[in-house]
Image (cartoon, rainbow, N blue to C red; front, side):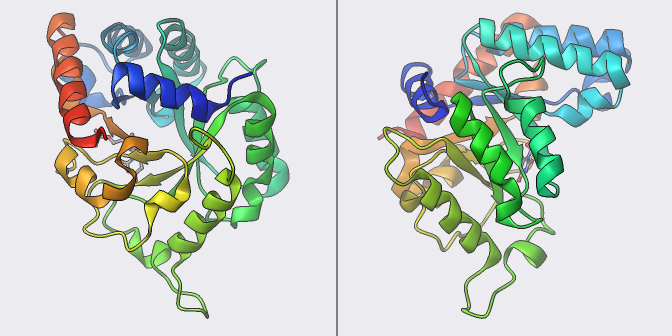
Length: 277
Ligand SMILES: O=C(O)c1cc(=O)[nH]c(=O)n1[C@@H]1O[C@H](COP(=O)(O)O)[C@@H](O)[C@H]1O
């Protein structure tokens, strides 16, 4: 069994470091000339996977945009996971789950157990019920060669009020989360399987990211205003471990498949130029 960190290292090295976010929101479906319906969602999702599945290192479906159509939307999400993996991309399920331990165990089964129809390579999780509440997720990930991306400093403007709160020792909440992630990745090679989410929109980080020894998922490039150059500056000491994620910045090129594929190729080259080495 290969670990998620090993698979991600090899995909980034061979395909280049781009994660294509699949966020089928109402505005994008309409811009593609599709109805905001399960049928529109299915057409959109299939095209996005055809555009990125054999080119990008990873795809990141945002579960909320599928869940809004109930069971029919979740069925489309299941096909996205299966089709993207069949095309060779790793799948990061963007679900941002986090709850008390016993419920977290059920989320871990849903997203990381190989027998689940929604089983992905990795899932985004929230540590804001306490890092220890994620234990069932880390156990499941290690048992099945899967990975996690733990929210540390997110790209939204409101994030600092919780994530930059300081404890009695003067350290920030986000810093302590990253310390816990580093502990979990200690001794892992060539890359740990427990990643963090750090927004590319941040101005500074004030954390030695090379210590993480795990992947850094960085959203915020494109529609939220950040660039690959911003990511390269922010994560200068761990550039090779960065997985930049772009959703609307790619999807806005649709619905034409050739245009979408050339956007994925262009953004991959740009990401590689800024983040390799
Ligand atoms: O975990 C995420 O992916 C995430 C974390 C974060 O800090 N900020 C953030 O925008 N995201 C997600 O990344 C995607 C960003 O989409 P675009 O702004 O269209 O590229 C959305 O699916 C967000 O839910």
